[in-house]
Image (cartoon, rainbow, N blue to C red; front, side, top):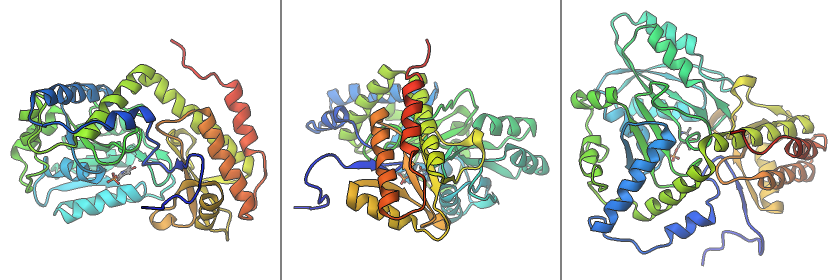
Length: 398
Ligand SMILES: *Cc1c(COP(=O)(O)O)cnc(C)c1O
């Protein structure tokens, strides 16, 4: 018997920015007999999820579903479209951008990286300038992270598209939406994205184990000539059987049941409402942080993430010690600082299956933890968030 949770009663608060809390509805949907993935029943499920998922990406293009974590979909985006030695332009917004960059390097791509201070979004002007300098069009792809989960900073993808267009450059645009899809407004088609990468365990409210590539027409064309080795990740192998709702190898059938249910939940709430809900909870969280007298990691107000909030610790105080007190005393998990932010920040996830009282419980746990751990702060953060939630309307108009 695993004894992972020593708390005898009540629910664990999983307030890391992914994996997120899985709704009971989704858990129940997953809890069904696994069926023959080549049988007649499966095709209906496959067609329903492969069609339904397009709405979440806001695309008419095919979406490929892999039985893998988000990292697999990063690799799939690159190996399907690029050839050995191709140059890619990446922007180091934080830890996840730097991991994608490392992955690209290991695949034999020539990575040109725009460095960043991990507190700000992608600067589309710098991308535009790099592309304008690349008169020979050696850069084959621009890769950016939409919501940098390690920092709580969201980048403007439409602005990146505009910068690429303004430079008149043919590079493909690839975007990681692993922690934004289903929680922050994202438009694959309207923003002219060629490949969108996503995962199941964040905004989509599913357990880890599925990942996605939305594949635009230019990316599909690039897949015909790309020469990086690929087999498991090959889109072309997927798209044939996908047309009838089937997969070339065994799919994660039970996670697809869960996806079907999660898509129904997102559709019932409506994407505009889902996005507004996340923005509202993020706003309340930032008011709490200000109320505590603590500093946000994100420096650009227009780029504060609707999905999570990263909070800097006062000098000389350990974020990991605080997180340990909160876990031991209040049974809540908060996100740790990643990479060079290790022990410097904690991250509050407020994405996915979430409501006002989930947020209040989360913020109460932080506020009690700050006091219990002896971290200098003012009380009243939770109060500020509650006052905002009480007066700010819960539903978007229309
Ligand atoms: C979580 C996350 C990843 C990593 O995804 P895995 O599912 O752990 O492979 C990559 N990018 C971003 C932005 C993420 O939030």
